[in-house]
Image 1 (cartoon, one colour):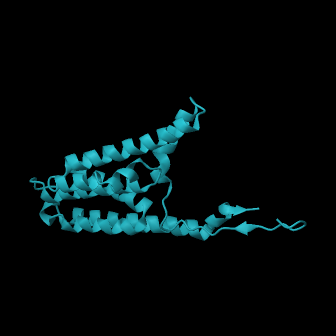
Image 2: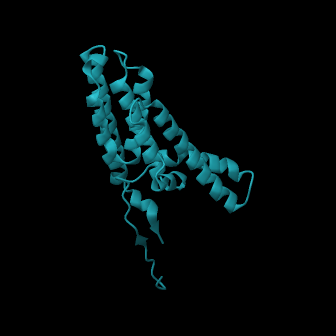
Image 3: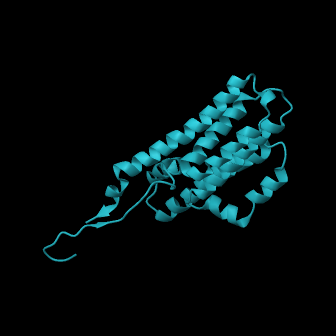
Length: 194
């Protein structure tokens, strides 16, 4: 800092394409609770990593259990060393990968299920996972194309199928508006240092 001058450094940041708080919500709540009982940074560090591993493992386990086909393929992808490392890290990539596996598993369940109509439980799980995926990384919204592979006879009528596709488009639009809204308001003023 130059004496007599007030120089402000600004660091540009863009929230477009970066993770939002959805990916860090549950680990941060549990870390806050653990912080009340300990002052050790090492305990907090490993607690956070174990919480991330637990969340990602449960989502991946449910995805493998749920999918009617390609169980071995999902298991191999989930047990790759790179996947395990991302599951246990503080990065949002582990949660993103687990949500993607669960979304693909629910879509495969709806596509290959023997029933003649869609189970609302699986549809709601897939919509929630798609919302999580879009909230973390917007380009992965293209995974929503898997809805087009669900046979049309599984919908009660064409109106229900159109509602699902309209909901998919609305999620993408809402996420784009939120991200662009943050960029418009200027998130970078939070990242300025004096």
